[in-house]
Length: 383
Image: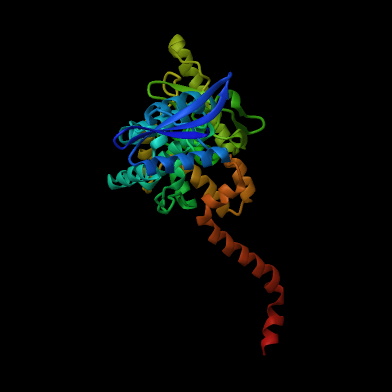
């Protein structure tokens, strides 16, 4: 007998489905149906069809909230970085657990998820935040399908808001010169000069150690990233495999770094045991890592103000480096490698705003190459 229906009361039926034998004993799964016998028969027929197709999922009683906790500990944290796992946990706790956490995992519907996303937008949250939240929830539910806890991923069937295009703010060549002039006379200015010229991510140059700087070869190597947690910090692997890279540095910058190293050594000797020996190139007064918010508000923005420039983000120094190189007609492959992008496609997509200028330059080169020597001939040919 593959399945049966047992009446339990008025408009109440138990549907029993035979799953096979395990250790010599018959295994059944029971499903309570509140409604008519016809509805119970419909469920049984669908369940038996799914069983024959090999896609039947045994009902689970775990709530979404409890499942997400299990997924984070058993699947997410062992696989991704601590920073990424903490980000998943924060998004799910803030936006998903409260409205949907009490639902049983196997009863979660696409409409439930869609409603939450709509409410997030109604509260003024950006499309980017909704998409980040969706990414965390989708990954969790994708694993539930693999674990055979649900038959399909409900988040596969929702509509996501479009992220509006925002014009990227970067420094022009003239702006960059003004910025460097201001940074040269302001506290911690060397950090931002290094950021602009290296193209590194903030978490990369703030984790840079003196052992990573080769003054003879004029390079700095990215080997780790600084990651901030709620009440602590740690060094972790760079963002991607290609983020591990060696960046060539200009001689004037290296001279400033050498002078900075000597000054730092003097401070270290004065502080003695009070100095935190992390070997950091850029650090606080006692050798501890900088925090990005502190750097931004205390040092970076005053430099922008002094240079009379628009307020950009600290991360935009990285974008400015890439833009300046592309404007200077540097090979996009070289720019991609300097930035540590996973593919050159990412570089071209990210900095597509520079491509029209590059196309104009390419056209001018072709014009010079093919028409400058034929100018007289072209004119005579039209007469």
